[in-house]
Image 1 (cartoon, rainbow, N blue to C red):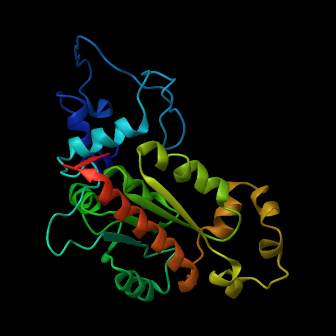
Image 2 (cartoon, helix red, strand yellow; image 1 turned 90 degrees about the vertical axis):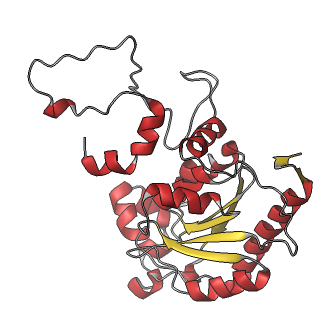
Length: 268
């Protein structure tokens, strides 16, 4: 039990139980705690997913995201029409990474997205405590980020919002599918994916074009996760603005369509 994790997820834990959080390792010898019932989880369904056919039966990832929005007292449970005149610009959250998998032309991406009609928020996953981050994410209509743990904050988005996952070069489609492409639609969100080409990655600054890491990514994957991670999950990228523009346009059209079909805050 690490205090840093307990502190980060305190609101979530308090939504699960009315009892205090106990660190068993620090309990005085002989202490006894009595409860009428206890729920003990021994197995995960899979990484970042909920199987409705496994106990507790019938729950989906959409139920989980609803629970998270409710736990953090978030206002938006679905995209809805902006009644203001003129209407508000759809809000796009661009996740900035500081240490690896950085967007080297983030400013240009911000400018392009703004020109398309988005209001832009740029944040690092460590900029705020989780409850503040939850509020910001929930206020957004689109979230954009390179494959990584920060995309898991999509659990705070309102339903029908858009998640854009940027997949680094190196045949990471399978990993990206397991973590997000599989789950996002089950949360009743729109999933879009942008795959980085070799010309958009800094790997060409690290390896010659005839290097196995460039020519044969599958052979790297066969050497195990840690070898693959070292080869492909520390690369920075410079997105092709014209190609990525098409993805942003698709996201914008989806948001506008949902707002037109909403009624009283509910999606028709």
